[in-house]
Length: 615
Ligand code: M6R
Image 1 (tube, rainbow, N blue to C red):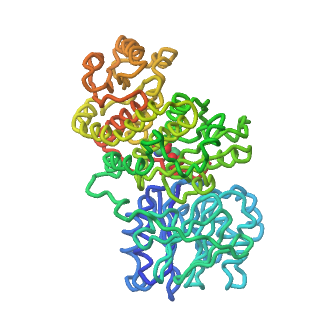
Image 2 (cartoon, protein in one colour):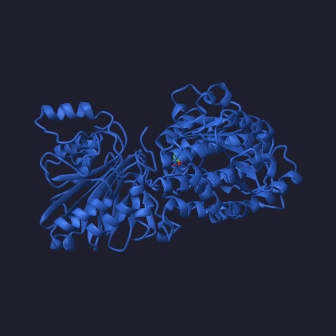
Image 3 (cartoon, rainbow, N blue to C red):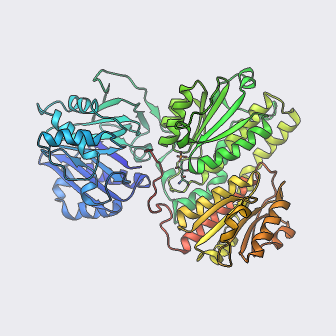
């Protein structure tokens, strides 16, 4: 949800900033902008559309000597919240005097009140954004012309809401001031250069040494390092962390789309998720990030799984894992709703926040509420150093590598695997026998290979996809472990192909949605050979009786199940626990090919952003 880059150093700032924006484009892509400084003053450009359009404009219109000389700047790629995606609403936003430029990710909740106050003092606003108000406010405090840090702190003291900002002042060409509350900011510490970004993917090409800002941190950023303060301008110290992946991991590597690359990467990602986490001797999983003794684990009385979107679907599968394997009551919470209800949390509850990015605002708010209510809170995140990972302190990283495609793929399968291992671990501290535990360890080890077998059917799935690429509506049905899988399959199809797709419990179809079935409304039925299949077969019959075409995900060799469908996609035989994992991989591939045939923007679907950092 908006990407920010800032640079102070010895390289050409324009090149670094445009390159950084391209790496962050998955965070938002409706408009983009850049402001850089050199002795000749500030150059600013903004454009609607992708970063490529901004780059064309800058390299075409700006003086080459200016570009070559500028060493300081900020840039932004936007996902609109306040005001439509038009040039005047793109960032950087500037103050009234044109001395301050600022890029912002987040929402200034009290911007109306601040705006009225500033307007009464003569300020004139040119955009529809909340961000412009903050730029003016900083400008208002920048009176003596030489203390940008003080001006930023004073302005932020007036602000309610969330922000990650990077600010530059025309007369301070050697520094930026950055700050965060609720929206991530990472500082990359290079040799005679510092890069500011919303996440590490824009930094990793320059350095692996980073500082993650905490909420209410403010930093003065120079080429030779950073000065850390809090919003009250009091010095704070923050540790330097190391990024443990390289720039190549965030490149397409010959694939047409990040999504396809990330689907194909799943066997490797899952291997990385498993690595070092199986203890065959004790027939259990090693979840060192949980840092709970077996006794403390045995003492947990309930698990609450929270997430949004794909992570919510992983939470729903997790509920089954914890109930079946750990004998623990488990509840799923749609994270956005959690703090607006009055959820009952008890002291021996473990809340597990699931989030690929670790930055989703709704999930973060749920984490804070659960902590406030006294729950032990753990994170299951992919992005190392992300806010949820840091605020929970307790938890498990996916180690799936950077996920750039807006549609989540490898993060989902790694989330299922982590939840499976967590449930195994809890189960072994409770009633799960060593024998059953050993069997589950064996299953876990085979997961990467099972997923590879699904990927091997890519061509076949592409053929099936071709038969359905013109559909305008689609239903996905499953039951048991395959119910959340149906929801995830439908989400994948709708977000990248724009086909209206609904996931339902197979039994629920007849309670209303079946009214919509007809010969041009296909149904994806999850018919893996696991408990519940026979009942879903009955529901498939009901669909066929309404002349709906049926595509089925079936267990390899289960010809009888395949017979019920117009098209069948085989997946390897698994236990019920892993059936959602292999089925979802098949549905990811199906959605990918449908979207490709429809000519959709697969990695950056309309209206979406990878990381949703506003409520
Ligand atoms: O980073 P998170 O896992 O917290 O993100 C949650 C959702 O925004 C995300 O899963 C979204 O639904 C994806 N676009 C799904 O593909």
